[in-house]
Image (cartoon, rainbow, N blue to C red; front, side):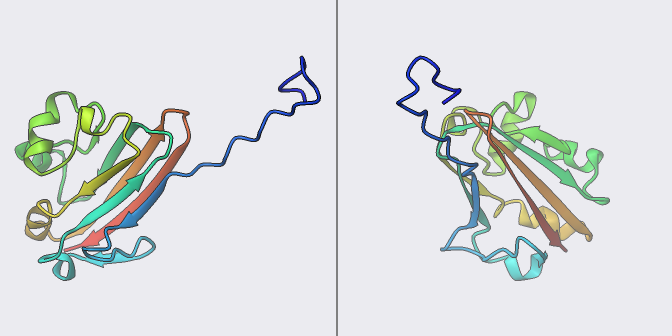
Length: 152
C-alpha cells in the first residue's frame, strides 16, 4: 500500500466518495432538479432544500443568475448575485432577514436547510427564469453542486 509504506500488511482504507446530497424537504414542495420549476406552483408550500454533507460544511456558495433579478435589484433587498452563506460578510443581515442560515448555523454542520420560502414573493415580482446555483464544499474539500431553476 503506497499510502502506508511503514506497514504494508495494513492497507489504508479507501476514502468514501463525495457524499454531499441535495433533496427537497419531504414536508414541502417537491422540486424538479433537472427541469424548470414554476413559482406559481411553489407559492403556498414550504420551499426548502435539505443539504447533507457528512464531513461538515465549509462553504455554501450561492450564485443567482437572472436577467431581472440583477445586481441592482438584489442590492435593494440586501443581497448580491453571489455570496457564501458560511461567510456572508456584509450580507448577513439581509440573508437572515430572508430566512437563510448563515455563519455558525452553516459552518461544520452536516445538514443545512436552504429555505427560499420567503424569497418566492420576490421571485414572483420579477418575471424571468431564475437559476440558483448551490456549490457546497465540505471540511475535506469534497464538493457538490445543484442548479435550481424557477420561472415566474
